[in-house]
Figure 1 (cartoon, rainbow, N blue to C red):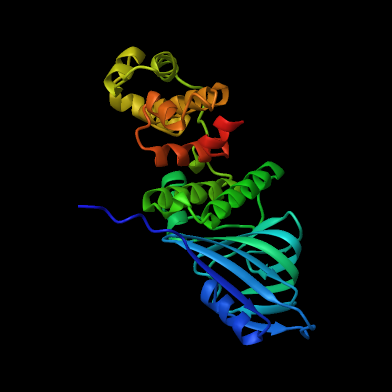
Figure 2: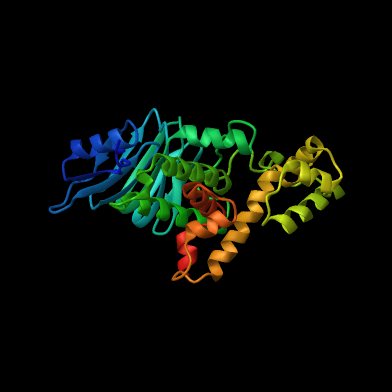
Length: 322
């Protein structure tokens, strides 16, 4: 029986100079709001192109109409944005920011927000809050509270800007692979994990983000050496534990405490790094991403692509072409 093709992103275009239509778009796409508009000049327009798959969305919004407003209830889902031109001002109890060309920021959740838009051109990434909540439970042992609207460092800023462009570009592609629910879910998870490392929050300065705790014990060092030497072979937890001279349970605890992952999780990291190196040195005319991924134990191409993107900031197909 033939299977139905995977869904493709839903694309929608808005083009208007009507205040009520602009306010309605903001309300439907982002949050309830009350907006105030500067006098609309002749020829001024508000345009938006939106792209949605279940659990993820991105938009390109341009306007020569200046407006400001308030969202008394605030945002229920995360909306991150990259400014290409003009400016976006956001004021909230969490913090304030005036973002101009090249800047990235986000609207805080569940708190009143005031905003002002001045002739702007932005790309937005919409991420349901449950993705971030799920990632926080894994990385920070529970919910987190964000303490600022901008990245923690210039490097984090560059990484987030690149990731936002990548996700938005993939969603805008008419033949987007994000029509696959599995790949869309992996991309959403990648964005959620990344935002916890990019934007400051209540666990940023704590050890909940799995910073190494004290000197690494000899058992963990021996296990790491065994993993790195045998990464090209089928390796089981009991084999790693035997090589380290520890019980599997004790080794699991040591890896969690000092490396922030399990022994088999570290094995996947090592294999991902080796696959990345192989892609960088391979000839794209004679090699494929799928073949490299399979050689290093990654049977699911979508999960491999998402893991590679999260670790190296680019899709494996991009690495292969470099």
